[in-house]
Length: 466
Image (cartoon, rainbow, N blue to C red):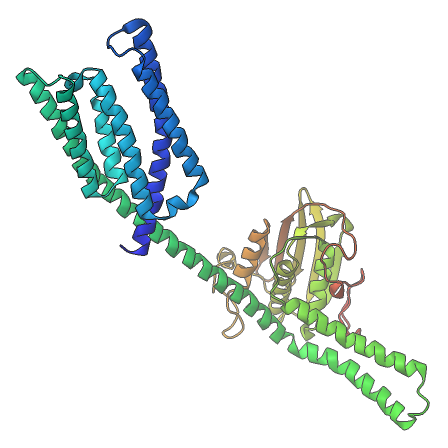
């Protein structure tokens, strides 16, 4: 038996045993009620209070089995122990049922029909051979009990009734065995399918994480020239100061040391920004000011030289407030949308990029509008499909927007787009607003990514307008 087959049998058998435990409470209660009715009013059968005692005993035994089920969970991790426990359950039930049948008429007892239910249980709870043995032992036990209590059938009709009951019991086992095998096969197939789905889900999740990281690395590649320029400027300044110090090393002036430290801090700030952007992130949701995340994303975009030929307008409404979001995910989404806007405006005579935030109802909204070429109506429904791109070969993979849309869905948000060919495009990022007081150093927002209320590309010599 394979491991998957065994696991499926264990799970199904354990669930059936627990269901039988619950059913036995009902059976014990009904036996007690029937015994009381017969003792007080009906008086159809002798033996007085014996059925009441039998029902109480069945309930007590079921309580013991229920305690074992709760206190010994490891008993249900082994198939052989489960089969032994199932045999004990069936032996208890059939013993009580046999006693009730003998007390209420033997071969003519009205409870004989309940044996059929236990033949079904025997087929479900035991392998095929054991189920047939259980049925045979039940028939033999009934025959011996009827003979020992002098209730053996006297007429041919009673004998045929007894034979019919025995044949029905064996037939029930046969049919139930076929049904049980089908149930096991279905459980095995379901378990195998679930394992495949879990494996595929884990694989897709890992591949998605890789795509997200690759998208970040692609963005950093596009910003490489701007980063080199941003670092070269302070390095050139530092080299000039060091040449002055080299000429007169014995008398360094304080303003030279301060100038060196300022340029070092400038380089450190650039490196921190790159590191924060390239970091994969841990997926945590934190309460952050939406405007601060927008500013940080725009500061990263400042390394792109195309921004220096673009008029940038910002309108960050303070009422937008803070919400619970993933800093790295939202930062990547905004960086991707901002890069797409710059790509769309490369052939435009007038380059204008507008970034605004506002609170609309129960949402925080970020709008990124460009004056680029726009998107044709037939493509608007396709831009969020994987690998669809209108960019030239080698410039776009068609994964940026699908990844961005998924990142926003994971935060309960969405991305909407409006566009007209030749007039530009507007992307709207909406996030559910969840206000909370945010204090510096307590919200997990990287202070290295903070900027002043006024946006300007690093370096200060860009000519970008607001």
